[in-house]
Picture 1 (cartoon, rainbow, N blue to C red):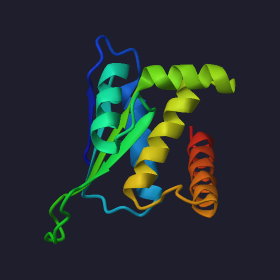
Picture 2: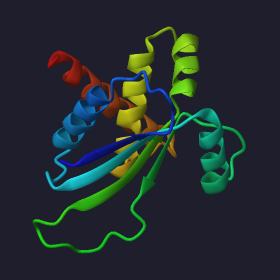
Picture 3: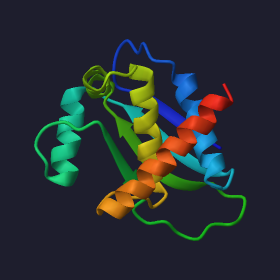
Length: 148
């Protein structure tokens, strides 16, 4: 499963290989074809604010954004299918982790899983949908932690 990770932060103190392992785990558990591609970008607060304003019309930064492919098209069975992009602002994750009383790694892992699930059609537009998405996030994170 090709996963590309780009960091727009310098230097990057995060374990990018761990992000890749978690992403692969989630995609595998969600039965995403092995030839699917995922892009993950780690950005600073200013860039996240620009993306949030530009794509959602919401002022200020957010923690994670997901961008599905604009025009998924039929492909041959062995061609890669691009799922989309997940963009995470680690600085926002650090702030949220402190507020919620858990580790930055836990928050970043949750944001990554959350972003991928959005690409796979999950949402939280209603309370029911939010509960389903949150339950799946927790199940995936618990299963991943068991395998470590």
